Each structure stands twice: as structure tokens, then as C-alpha cells.
Image 1 (cartoon, rainbow, N blue to C red):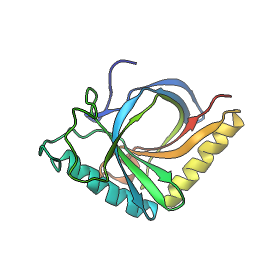
Image 2: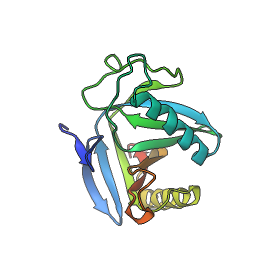
Image 3: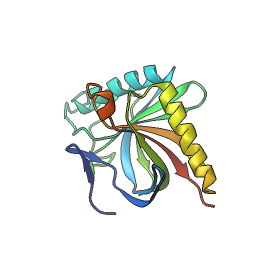
Image 4: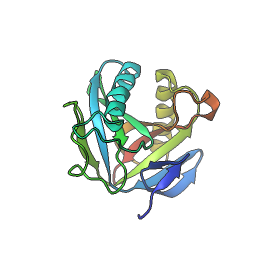
Length: 179
């Protein structure tokens, strides 16, 4: 899996599409490095706060005052019963050792291992109700095909908040297990 897929000029994690069926894809993702922060509270508050922490870091809020290229998607995944993890992928070729040290100690670097994911793309404002409906429909799609959910849901957001709802690319994903 060499190369990087591009979305509107922004780097994103590389993946290969295994299959497409009824509006969902099975994708094989390669390993990639993320900067992440855990936030408590409801989903909407957590993504807003987490995005701000990570944006400050990539826009120079680090020990070297160095800017880092923006990538997509911004990812969000549940953590426990009242928390969320917000992630920014780091540009290819960077490692935890070459990235500037964050000024905010809540930021951690994690290498996301390769994974096989079921993914469903949709547009609109990513409200909690819409995300819950989309993740429920994808979970049913997975179950109907005899696949096993290992982890998720993950939510992927590709566009700026200024993008009109019908032009937004959002995705819900589940990491699939064996058998």
C-alpha cells in the first residue's frame, strides 16, 4: 500500500477498496500515525474541544512553533460511557520522534495498525441522531453479510464546518474481525 489518497488537496490515510455493496465499502487501511486527545462530555462538545486542541498543535502550538500540514479526516470514536477520542492523522513520512513536542500534555501520538473496515459515506450535518442512524444501518449491513464487528463505530469528517450540508463528506466505520 504505497502512496497517499488525496481529498480536496489534503492527505488522508491510504486504503484499498475490497468491495462495494449497497452503499457501503469494505476497505483495507494501512498503518498510519495520529495525534489524538481524549475529551469527556457529549459528542458535539468533545469534537469541538478536541479539534481546537489538535488544531492549535498543528498550527504551531508546539515546542518548536512548527506548523504541520492539515490532513483528513478528523476522526472521532467513543471512549467509555462519557468520553470521546478526537484524532488528526499526521502526514506520511512523519514519526512520533520527528514531530514537534506538543505544548498540551493531553495530546498523544498513536500508530493506528492496519485494519479492515466497513465504511458508509453520507452527507449532511453530523448530528448525533444522524450518526446514530448511519452507524445502526451500517451495523445491520455488516450483520446481514455474516461479518463481525471488532471495534467502533468510528466517525470520519472530511470537510470544514463552512461546507454546505449536502456537499459534506462524512463516514461511519467499524473495524471488522475475523470470521
